[in-house]
Image 1 (spheres, helix red, strand yellow):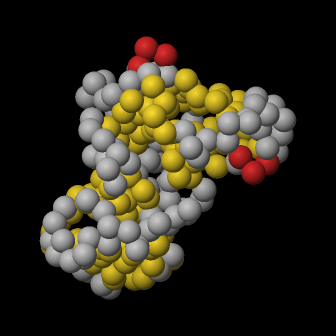
Image 2: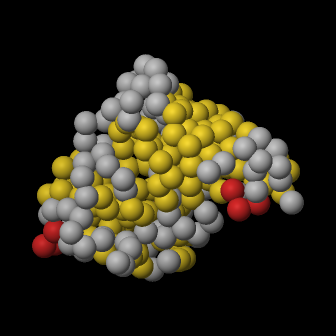
Length: 109
Length: 113
């Protein structure tokens, strides 16, 4: 059972556009991680957010953790073709990570 | 520093055949995970090891899947017999702390014909 629902499931945009990916749950997490996975590779950690309401910026990527620590968002400004990949959120419980359903992003030149 | 190593990268077998996947985690990482990932979806945990002990195998289909982590380092995941629905990518990951950053291998893409 997937406790973390991501939306949209698929996103196809042109270079230069902005986009937001959402990660929602009814459960509270101690922290939330975002990973990006490229074809033929394993997921790679982008960021970890820990505090409710926390906002972290990584160049053109902005991550936010919901106040209640149940949801998160990833906003990409001026998308580039190199941003193409599968984006995964993962919520941390006491002793495990629960991965979201994934958002596949395709950025066209 | 070497990352998580998995082999083989690809495996094609006929249904009812056995198959095994191998994983070597990052040195010093006591926690090792095996995940199943279907195309375009998030990884689903199969089993988690703390050293050589399987501490969470609740999602492992034990009638056909087995795993071991001898000496608390390398790990092997086996399927016997394989079914068509087992076609997926099998990811291995390791971490230094519980619920911390996980480092993934490239995965083994299994195709069952």
